[in-house]
Amino acid sequence: MRGQSKTDSLVEALTNIAVGCVAAFLSQLVIFTYYGLPVSLVVNAKMTLFFTAISLVRSFFLRRLFNYLTLRREIKREAREWATQPHSFIQAANMEFNKRKQEGKL
Image: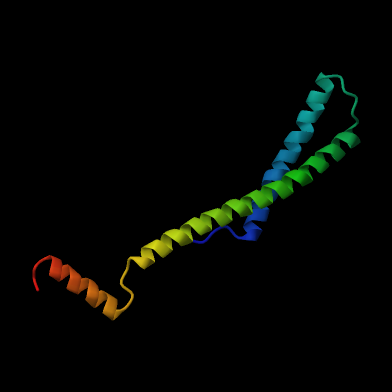
């Protein structure tokens, strides 16, 4: 299994952030108006972009962290599976010998 590439992580993070950016801008317009906070569209847009940049960085690095943890878990699982398999003729012969010995066929 192969994890998500850095490019794919960035594209996902950018898409998520773009949707969040629009949602934040529109919700701030509604919320600020509801509470009577005088914020111009320019100030609202600057605030939205500032928090969006923070969100983008956070989202990208969290995605990479979870991708790393998933890959590490996969590698450990595969290593455990590999360690239990015979990897040489001698090891396979020894396993077969022990099996036959336990079955009383020797």
